[in-house]
Image (cartoon, rainbow, N blue to C red; front, side, top):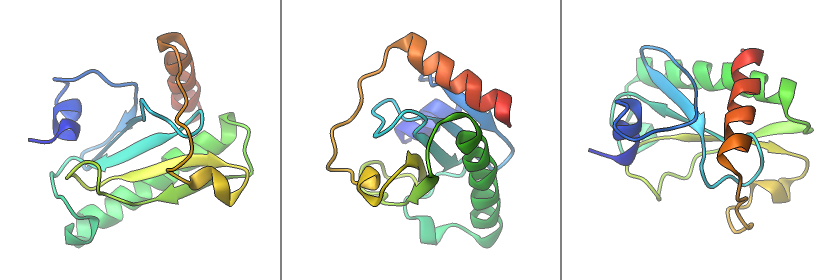
Amino acid sequence: MTIFTKIIKGEIPSYKIAENQHAYAFLDIRPLKEGHVLVVPKKEVDYIFDLDDETWTALHLFAKQIGVAIKKVIPCQRVGIAVIGLEVPHAHIHLIPIDSEKDLSFANKRLSLSEEEFKNIAQKIREAL
């Protein structure tokens, strides 16, 4: 069982943004930028291209909704999308507020936010949904 499955099941706490029958969205606790959200399928599949078509489509439509909400409340030019999938063996999409292509680099220093900051960001994004 992956760490993401444990988060989805509530065994590990998260700063949840939203969920539906196919996917779960929560703040990355090591964000590149404020508002960095992970969107994961509830189905535990390692490689995103191994998802069945229904799950793939549902995951991306859900990510679109979350991305639109992020853009409404986090100052940025765009919300970038990254699918890397090497750090956790559970397919996931990174939604990252960006002002330049450099903001999507995972070589960048990660932010260190307080619990209060995470809660505030999550609440803003949830309210924008």
